[in-house]
Length: 446
Image (cartoon, rainbow, N blue to C red):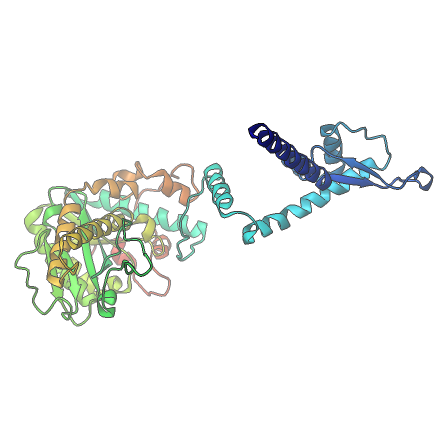
């Protein structure tokens, strides 16, 4: 009985192989109509092709030869060992078969990605496609599109301005950068292990939060500088509306020089920035006396108020503005700080949440977590590298290659010496703002 079963299995396998072979032959069959009526004997002749017209090599030859169907038909005939002279209609039929297969490829792919193909095959194909052509799995970020020539003009003007600031300084220069970012009361959790949903056994794993907690946001004003000795002394400001954290935080002393300012709104305005510049000037006079201070700001509307320049003059801080539309590429806080800081905040938040009995983090505890994140990131990193990679230090000798590629340059173009012209400086600021740009470039002139 065992011998009969094995023989039956062998016959089944051969039958299935024969069925697959006949299926391939029928799909690659080409019907030939003789070119002359007198050649018809028993109807049209059918030729079976071992290499079908939709094979990759055939379509590649068709595409590389400028979609020459005649050459592709000759290649197809050679692959199948056919004589192009017999019958005489073979070249035209093979050429038509190649063209039809080429036109059918788009439809086949469309049907495949609409669900005709298997999910696992789709994932494997997409993975090979990403590896072969240098793509990655991610989301396309929505941002303002700046023309390439305008980007180059803005970057060149900014670098020329920075070179002029360094040449114009009469004392050791201290370069700083301040920017605001939004922080959530409930940070986005990292990817981790969660409970699987089992019917009638366990509820869905969620992090419970009220609507007010999910919407609660604060503004964090972060300051970094190129000097590691001065960095721990710089103020880091958290703006709150006083409702979530209370009028007076319950935490006695926060780490990382973090200060909480309660105001009517958690948004930063020009009054907030004037207060910040005054505080920064007093801190710098104690931490780094005898130096010239240069503060990099983006072109946010609150940063361009006329009172900001007057307050900076009183605090002996020179202002340099980053080109509008390019802060994501040229601002050290955007390129190197915020992603690292928020990742650390989320990590510490999840750690504290796992240690809590009920998983609830009170606002005062969240404030301690934020101060710990600020303390563990800002003083621990040498931010001079971030200033060098965007061209704010060392005369653009260490600008990162990714930045040059974004601007369409293989190497850095020569930057003229001297202060930028009025037209070049206007390219840095928003067009809608009527600003006397010479007062910022020629800072030391009365």
